Amino acid sequence: MIIRPKNRITMQEAAIVTSSIMLGSGVLTLPRTVTEKTGTPDGWISVILSGMIAVLAGIMMAKLSQRFPGQTYFEFSQHLVGKWVGRLLNFPLVVYFIVLGGYEIRSMAEVNSLYLLPRTPTAITMVLFIWVGVYLVTGGLMPIARLSSLLLPITVLIFLMTLGLSLKVVDFNNLRPVMGFGVMPVIKGITQTVLSFSGFEVIFF
Image: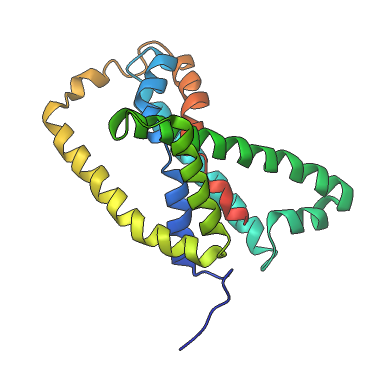
């Protein structure tokens, strides 16, 4: 039996963890936000283009991380641009993940209060989410990968079931006219939808 260090995961587990993190609460609000931003039927084009941007950015991050095996972004950034400049570049990323974590926790707490526990204070739900997250990360990267491997198939299954049920009310005529109002609505939609694909940055770690 091969025993792996607690901070070592396989490529398949890394893909599962990245996918699980990207499937955040942004998916729930994506249809409304992209429609409000574009104001046209071309929101689906913005979603596809944003997905392509996220894939290309993820590939570049993965290639960069492969050049420094065994190191995280906080470590190899100092080799790329120097010690002090690297530390300055690390700070915005730390702030970004703190803000992203706070946004996800608050969003999930609101969804939970709306559909499951309407009488439970939102603060209590948020504290419980934080406690579970802290308990999980103290075990290293491997427990996170195992939990993601357990939950991702369930999430995908529910997503596919929801998608299948919605096919009965789909009318593809609502996608027309394609680009009938020009390119600008699509570009405005990209600026909004690209945030829903955030999370692939964990490839750096």
